[in-house]
Each structure stands twice: as structure tokens, then as C-alpha cells.
Image 1: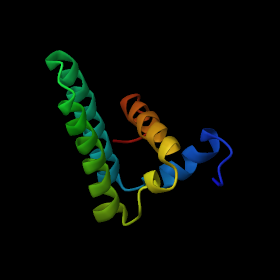
Image 2: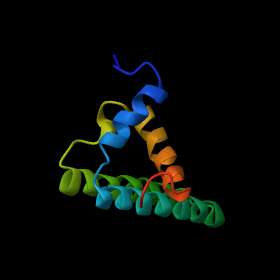
Image 3: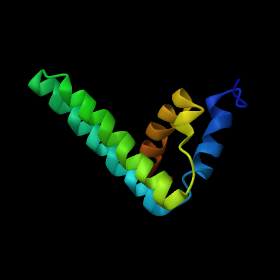
Length: 100
């Protein structure tokens, strides 16, 4: 059972798990890679590129967590909120709400 009743409650925790600037940058680069690879999968009509997108997104994020944040990704305990958090943080970085 989750200790978060909503994503609104989860997101501050998510941000606290991404306080390291290099980790946030790695998440951002991984998310950009995901978008490009998903677009490429559509253009190529080849679903294998979706696997590459998955590996890209999680690969960059997990390097950030294990080597810079020194914590376990929230994905392990809160997969859906964590996935949403990745994209909200991506948007917040793009809009300047969070420092890149």
C-alpha cells in the first residue's frame, strides 16, 4: 500500500529524490532520448525502437540515482507515480520551474 494518497502528495517526495543537478540532467537527457526513439519507432514502424526508448529512459535515470543521488529509484515502489513524475519534472525543467 502506498503512503501517498495522490500524485500531488508524491511529487514533492519525487523532487527530493532528484536533488542532485547531474541526476536531473541525466533524467532530462534520457527523456529527450525516449521522445526521439518513440518518434523513430513510429516513423520506422518498428516496435523494437520502443525497447530502445525504454532502455534509454531508465538507463540514464538509473545512472543518476545509483551514481549521483545514491538512492533507489522511486520506480521500484511507486512505478506509476514515478513515471508521471519523470514527465512532470521534464516539463518543469523545460519551463524553467526547476533548474537544469
